[in-house]
Image (cartoon, rainbow, N blue to C red; front, side):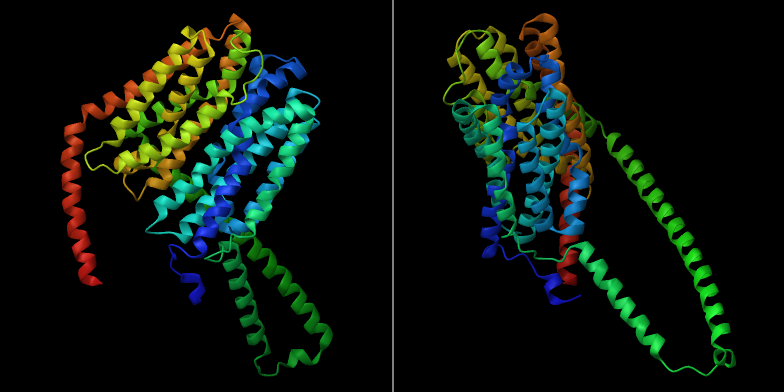
Length: 485
């Protein structure tokens, strides 16, 4: 392997250009999906479909990227951040432009929900991966800056989409937003790879093996009497090649099937072991309940304010803008709180869930727009608890299994994000009121927070003892590693 393949993270230099490009990439990709609540009332007025069916558009654009996160990460590992970002820019831009010509909600579900959602998932995986490659000691700061792009994008795009709809209509708004998303391709130009992607390494290895084979073929060999007869030689070589090719193909296919089967069985066994952990199972349930309850407000708050007559039209600073900017503040502050030594991440996350549940239950009793603005800020701040999840997961399962456990959590989160808004919309279609939908959302979140709090509390003393033992073991291991070094 060449020296370029093993370069260390520079922790600065061109890395800050990577941070700027990744920040802009997430802002451009997630700006519209994070402020989809502005588009939702317009789609209702345009297509006159049910609220439950229309809600699938907003739920899929957020949930598909999370569920497909393992596939998106595999694409980045194999092909690199730059090609994946270019492809995702085409997907996000194309999906938004196609949505401008949507004849019905079902077409929107495909163009905006699935295509844009997958593009956002690819952008997120590529930007986070390339940032982690360039930063080690300052990785937390770099990732904090990059991921804040989603919140700032939601804040800016909510107002921008509102103004574009007034000036150019819904179709013109989506076309303009799609044109802006093409700048994701420009952001990819700055993403100079620090390590060659896996696909490049495989191709280079295959070429080297092929060149070695050609050298061996050119080596002098003893003359064979059969070679004096060209027709006999040609027939033998042709038959031998056919047999060899068929045998090699069969053996390669058999090895591939066995290796994939072994990997899948090992993954399922490992996932089963993780789910047997009581606290981790409670984390999965709580995240499912949290996403099931907290994502409907992002989609329905603007429509709720208009339906209840609290405001005639969308405000200059929509409620989703307040949610987005408060979420950015929440990510930063909760991340800072997590650096406090005595702070317990599980209890902190459970507290944010309980606060979110109470805020959701208060929404039906709020009869003025200012109250909804305050509740939006509270919901946005507590939705910054996504920054707590990696800390909490590391505490429960350890650093070695963080990636696997985080993938399982994201699957539960993505599944509930896809289900939450349509269910809330169907409740409105049935009751002709959002009250029951918000009561159910708040109840789900409260149950998830209480379950996580109780599961962590019941084994708190045990966990403390385990942590103390683990710290002693880790100290001894670090001493051993230092001695070897």
